[in-house]
Image (cartoon, rainbow, N blue to C red; front, side, top):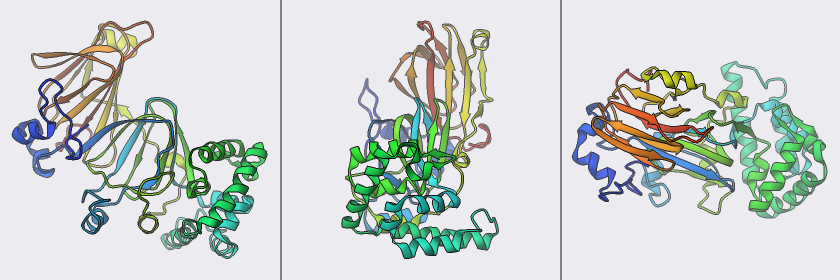
Length: 402
């Protein structure tokens, strides 16, 4: 959902493209957003239902995006960066960022197939240079640790297909047979049982793949419904299972390296990553109450809420609104920029000025700048909620910095 030229949204009644609508009426974007983002929405809004794992990937920063687009516009169609945010609708599993270095050292010692695939010399070099300095926060030490992590990850991703297939056979057999003792019993964040089950499941989806061994490098993250994580440009990640709402800067650039039949660019991926290593909790977001929504009395008594997910970038923020009883209502102050609203459950009405529309699961609406928005739950079954997600961009200091 958005104005990206590869597949711009359109009005289902008239067939008019959203790209053309805002291009012809810049007041819908607001002057600041229109000027900064070249008369287009600066974000893409998506729903992903992940039954089969999505690729291990990263999105280039602005400088690298321009280089890749100039060199290979077929595979890199945009010159823009692509930070993104994922908000769980159902229970979610994913990979995000590099594990703490102590965990990687543990797996190198306890997963023979991983050690053999990378090579004993590279493993020994990494452990000798890392051990004792895993959590040293001195700038010079962190830089050296990142260089060593890059060297190790490059050795993994550069191993031959023949060696990968041989190592995968050993890995999958161990994952199937060792139970809780797999991978030395795992680490605090990811048990041996969990890792073994992941290996078996992902091997069934992709066969011999570098992504299987990346599990020992990358944080495994789970999100409960309503939890979220933010991914900066050059952050490595993969989505394993679950339903999410995703918002990102307006770009289709993806650098892939595993769990995919699509174009892979391992050299670029290895070179571009930040190699930041941290516990997975550092990637999760802390949403807050949205301060510019007024709930009526029925909303307060029913436990309804409007929650803001506000990442540290200009292009987008997202509001999740849940109205939990019929007659519950939320009135939103006008925004100085555009927004797209998606209903994922329940039924209700949305009003912008004199225009009133029925809303139900799967309905999507564009809301122009400077418009007051009112949402009201209607005809809810027992236990049902009227839940919407609203992605927006606003340059003025009205939405807590978004």
